[in-house]
Image (cartoon, rainbow, N blue to C red; front, side, top):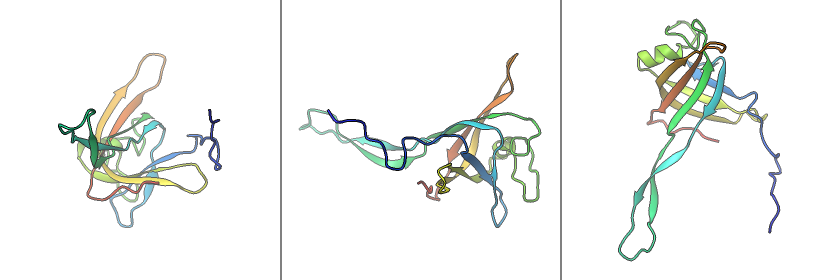
Length: 157
């Protein structure tokens, strides 16, 4: 039985230092880090089509269209934080996530990984979910959902 193979680059990469950023609508675009982000999820998947025919013993499926799926993250929500609130803000500051949801505005987003090379996954998306939770003895949080919006092809490392 073969032993464990470790990447020559390293055994793992800490999530600490990852940046989740949103762009401004202006030109040139400026990317701003979303404050207090945690628990990020960036799925990549493909739709599949069943192409099983009468000669197959097992189902046969092939991938078709690619999809970023449900992009999600949480924030420790601060009502008046520039990147969180329901405000256009103005100038070179980005609109808040709640504003982007309510106004149904697409923006560019990027995950910048802390690998020392600025490896980045970038894509246009809409904010399609903003669920606030709070309980006694804890802090306010919000679960954010983003939905990829083409036709711009995502830039993935």
